[in-house]
Length: 188
Image (cartoon, rainbow, N blue to C red; front, side, top):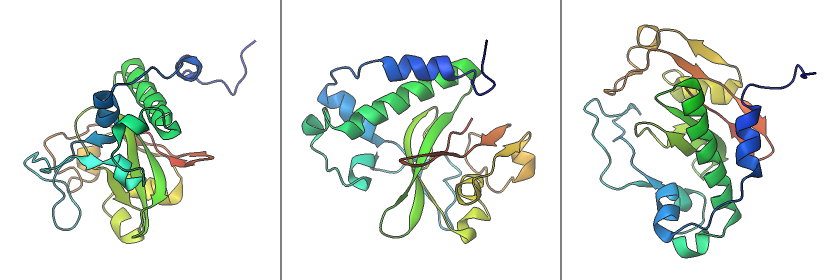
């Protein structure tokens, strides 16, 4: 008998959570903590010309872990990010999504933000400020502040000024989930 609380993604979670974190090379660890992000224009929108920032975003620095990737290979945060990355990959395959990611609510000193921990797809911004002002133009920040699901069938028609990058989502679903480590936000 199947419980009504079971999710179609339970097999994905069981597969990842039962897997042992592999021994990771320094390059693999670095690629988990550093990723390309678009240039953020004045006002917070991403570049219209798919221009990438000159330097990759460093998640390790944002989490206060430093850049000793050899030492980070055995850090619990690395195991967590590895698991999240594997879940995002399997989820993207399962639902045939071009982009899926997970963010965590953290305070980086300048206020709370959604911080991208793992994703599959094109480069996207690493941080979404959790302020009412930013949420006026950000589906992600809106969900991060409210915890409500936001489903949009035609994202470009709903908020065309928001989708300024070359990659324009036709369907955008932003969900919030609460975990002991903070707010998780997957997007497809």
